[in-house]
Amino acid sequence: MDPTRTAPVPLPVRLASGGPARDAWPLDQKIVHLNHGSFGAVPTEVVRHQDELRRQADLSPVAWFPRAPELVAAARHEVAPFVGARAEHTAFVPNASAAATVVLNALRLEPGDEILVSDHGYGAITMGAHRLARRFGARVRTVSVPLAATADEVVDQFRAELTDAVRLVVVDQITSPTARLLPTARITELAHERGARVLVDGAHAAGLVEDAAAVAGADWWFGNLHKWPCAPRGTALLVTEATDRDDLWPLIDSWGAEERYPERFDRQGTLDTTSYIASPRAIEFIEREYGWARTRETMAALADHGAAVIGAALQPHVDAPVATDVGLPVVSMRLLRLPEGLGRDRRDADELRRRLLDLAGVESAFTSIGGVGYLRLSVHLYTEPRDFDAFVERAVPQILAFADERRRR
Image (tube, rainbow, N blue to C red; front, side):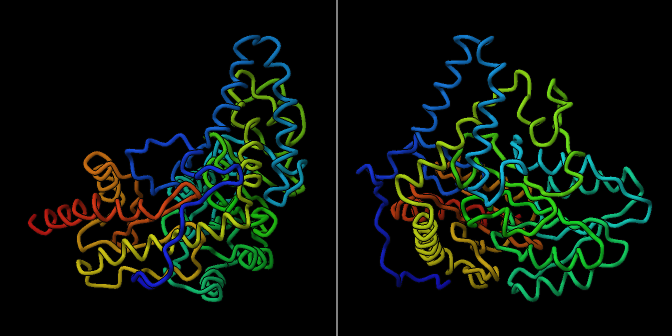
């Protein structure tokens, strides 16, 4: 990625229905929204659909809740093919971390067994791996993956760490802190040769990777629908064809506990499952209005343009290249290096995010990798080129002021 503005400026996206994509999401127009990857954004059409489902539940709870599992199952059959899965292998869960917990709760280890994670993993998932290890006297080892590693280099790093003691590998399909792809199918093949099983964190993969669950190659895969597919928040999928999938249980028991996987996940008492039921509408909305393949192409062009605009503004203030090589970038996110002293750890990165929202009205994400801070830029169809200009105008001065404060400490 070249941090100069050489490519044509992308035009704002217009949907098949004729209006600008910006108007199809109920986002605050006073805020610059450049962090879709953290919590997603739900189109107005989908918000209204979910509101209507909730209205039905409130109008007649006794009619709604006994029937809700049927609606969840129907939604499951609709959305499973979107990630290349079959409905009978797919369960709805509240989020990616919940899916990981479901799997980790089902596993049994022996003292001395090992779990492999990477240093690009999502913190909450890695914490779950450590908790599993503590329960059984096992241990967690971390595979170090260079930020710019190629697919072959990543595989070599895992190969070097896969001992006969490894029973489980936990690896990201798309890394959250570093916004890059990892070759999970190849890693799974290696792990299986050594007798280890693989849990793939596809939290960011649905929508960005076609048939994400199918191509992951894992024993278990999970991914959020409330990120790039723009489903209501609290909507994720757990997918597995493992022969022991009946060992997987929802985090809360219900009257469906004696049903098999995945049906036992459809019945969750008085839990608001309207997010699950509404999720097919979100996937269909983007396909109908723009097309998923075209959406990925457009997000890549927007992300490249944004990285060029913001990178050009930051480069004079950064001693290293702002444009960051992540080896295998994803279509919708880019990583840009920050001035010295910013983002030295997660707490510092979070402080910068809060500061820019409060002082500049900019939603953004920052991450820390090896003591170095980065801006993680992420876009969707509602993103417009003017958003990147607004970031330069409103956020870059705050970033530089914050960096100056740090240097004076």
